[in-house]
Image (tube, rainbow over all chains, first blue to last red; front, side):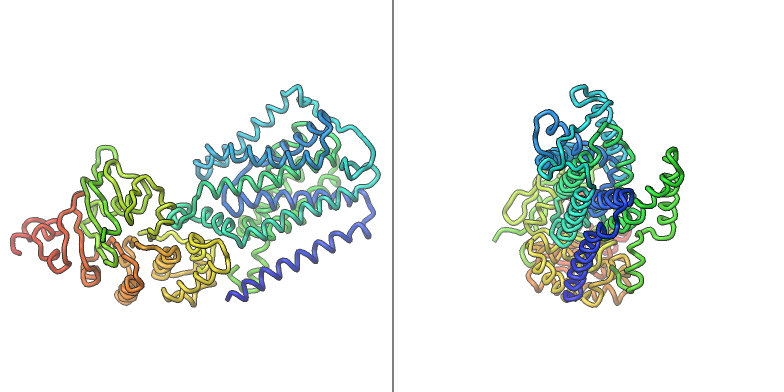
Length: 325
Length: 243
């Protein structure tokens, strides 16, 4: 029994390593900048969704406000860079820590809420964050911040001539988020989170400190998402509140995980690999005003998945093997 | 030696309703104690107070020489109080062994050790064959046993059983009784709430009868069932006079 379990864990790790190597090699074949852009976004959303999945999938605290942490990461990185000359690497780290701190400060009152009330609170808080940034003059208010071009450099994490460095960073972020999940899945925290999701009362009776579990999940989740936000800001080279903190980001973090399989190791990656290219392609085929159409497409997809495969696409694989998980 | 568990003058009021009034009971080490009483007697409330689901309105609860009145359920579990739920609360999306690992993680953070412990407990409770099945796929009697297994994995000194034998078929109930004896033989004190008298009485060393939130009678099971006060509480005064 234990052998099966260890084998499965090792198999996951090997598959991930192979996928990472294959992904790392794609730029050798894919020279088209447009396609590269799609790949970068796919990897980034896979990483974000994987991070979202820690709090909402494993620990069961559905957040539709993770755009707040994404935006915080983006703003912290760029404010530190443009106002104080702090390198984006440290900015991303600072953004991550700030987001983790804020996630816990918000968790303190909100983790007392259960179910739908918690979800509503996350939406409201993210909207408040958006409004604050839209009116904060020092941070550029609604006009946002343009990141000054200082020439291509790894130190300043800025590249104009090629997208490849961004691609590799997104890939690394995706690998880190996956690996953190993989590692936490078979740890005390991972078990505590799943117990909290399934039945908080029973968890409490078994020595699980429910509140601390949720706080831990929120901190890890927010940290990783904020690092992603810092990356995105550097990638765009321009940020404004709507383009890094808009509600669509909260959705785009949640949907891949839901599509692929919420609370599973592979769900977010699988979901992002399908959803993000589809979104981008729909958008470009329909044309500039197609913003609503891609939303219709994945709205329909989610409805379909929840009806036919409520445990997500990954359940197809476990069903084929006849395994229970 | 002092008692393992003691409640001292415990009161619990829910608004105007007094669920427990001045309840003082004690459970000695190595005993199997039955907490019985008719519906609405306050058994479940007292049970939840002991498990730490809510603090009592008044009075104190002592476990293993410590005042645990203000401690939360998770802390009491760390001290050695294990419990089951009357309405089973399995972690449905997790496998049986994973359910038990959650309990084992109170004593260790090493996953290998927790997993070994979980398998050991599953062996003990007769669930080993179901280890890798999702908890949602278990039949009700197995879910009850999983509740016990999970609690045992926390290595409790005191195991609180909330109607684990109620609603089982006679065969299942016999298996359950055997398991409770085995638990006690492993050195764990048991406090069990039941209202099926004929199952509990042969099993327990001592019975505490609650009625209308108060301790009515306590003593050896054979004496308790003959006590006119108990008969009247269960069946009404008319029957008690005949005894």
